[in-house]
Length: 257
Ligand code: SAM
Image (cartoon, rainbow, N blue to C red; front, side, top):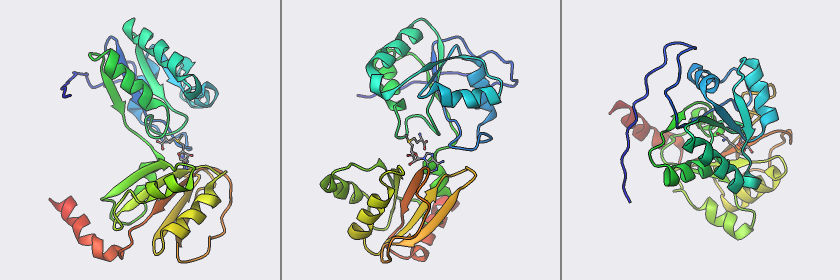
């Protein structure tokens, strides 16, 4: 199936510029911790839409209050996804402008955002779906790893069963980077699994990115698990098996061409 679409959206100049008439679905990136990490465009969109769908309205209220945004909010939750998608479709069909935000970062990256995008694309193909880019734990972690980031394979949360976990970890080439999201409950177990399954790989662990207790740990799967505070949110990067200096030429070539 192929389709092509182009929507014309006037570039906003001013905080008070009206958004184009609906329907429209804006997929708006919000901070992964530090409330200052939000774009001016994101604030303008959140301020101008008819409805904000958020995973957790209490969490997003902190952000909206900080910037004086009073647009109406409604929750969009993974455990009642069918009802929430149906509600959003109904609102778009009534010509509303909706912004979707997730608990943290860019909606659609390991959160329910993609369900809504898929449904809108299938059911209201003429409705513009507009990304408003910004933070994500994925981009933040890759930006400071210092390894060549192509190819990078985003695995998100690993499956829980060991067999499936092993298959997931074999997804990328050995000279590439793997990006894994993990919760505090499973971080130690996951790192131990990676240590056994992926010998000879450098690992960068990012904890609580952009927050007060941000921490980075560089480690190698040849060594025992490092000491770290088991609190907060984690991103794990598995680095290339080859030495990164071997890879640098191709990185420079890419950016120079
Ligand atoms: N949509 C988000 C994004 O753009 O990165 C990710 C949502 S996913 C449900 C949440 C996971 O992202 C966390 O369990 C953690 O692995 C990672 N994450 C989110 N914020 C983070 C932070 N401040 N520091 C480290 N990891 C974070």
